[in-house]
Length: 505
Image (cartoon, rainbow, N blue to C red):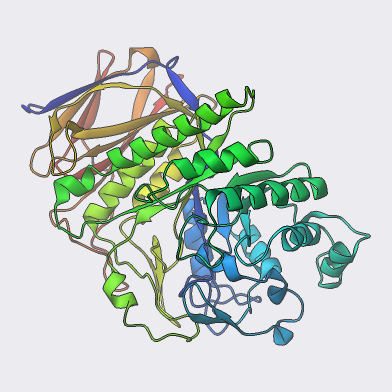
């Protein structure tokens, strides 16, 4: 493989970043647009099961192996009464949903969503309303979901047909409370206090739970990262995680700059880690706060269409980005960034899962299909289980409008010791040149190549539709192993998954 563009990687199984928590491959379902109604739930659909959930969607979610799903919001949760979604469905109230100015029918609520999560083999990250509500609603909800029996709320759950508790172990204390758009927006001090007291009450009900405090809604917020510092200063003893949210877009149609935005994500994570550790030092604490990147994705395609949707309708099409090939490349780099911080980022949620800025799309009464971003998400979720290794990479670099020294090769490495498998994920951000990545794998003697999966397309703007899949991976990538070196041909503008396994013959 002759090529003037080369990159080098040194690997050693002892250079460990950390054990990967499978929950970094989580996702998000909010009562927003067609995520629930027309997405996961459509009782009149030909493929609806006995509860009204679409079996074609269930199968696609299972294909992604999503380990945890955040629910029910999002901005929606800041005005949500969870009690509206329990009991007889025909008796549930229809409410004005203020975050997205729609009508919430409450056909799907807590119990139904817990049933759906079991069908897709996922745990639930439940969010409580700290916008218009607080301690009482949260402690009652966790009593309803997690307490066994013998109390008002636990026995009410049993009367609704759920004898055993749901045992939800991961809880978000509100959502984006720093945002002025949030119903019940709070200053850092106001939120820190209510998070502390709510968390305390919830852990009195169930001491085994983990709690996620809200961080900044994004890095452009004027209070970032002071918001995180103040919240943690107040609620440090009660919470286990701080949340991060970030979305990227390419409105200027500058692809090299767009693909470099994973560097911004990396800087965001490092800043939040520094903030957490500053508060840890300030408090002389032995407790380490972990990160929950529970909203991340590309989001910009649908902005103009959303402005045309009439208010107060049921499940209108909102935030329905149609993703192209270059979006899949950035999503791949964002997943790589999460893996590079596996020691501190222990949960993450691609927002969202179905129809709403999602890897899975559906037509009402029709088919479902995989968007371009489905594939890097699937590859990393399925093959990215194990230990994240620290790789030393020497890659050619470029400068873009907003970034300098951007490596053309962006890569993460996962070692599954139990299965004796090694997986290298790599994005070539060069739009014209192939790059050969030479990997020193002498630490992995006896490993042989299983496959080299490639996602590539000559058209950066190519998309998938219900009728045609233009962006799909193939396993004809060119990689060879020779004398302890793995040579990977990373074609221009490509997502690569290189899988190796120990040969015992």
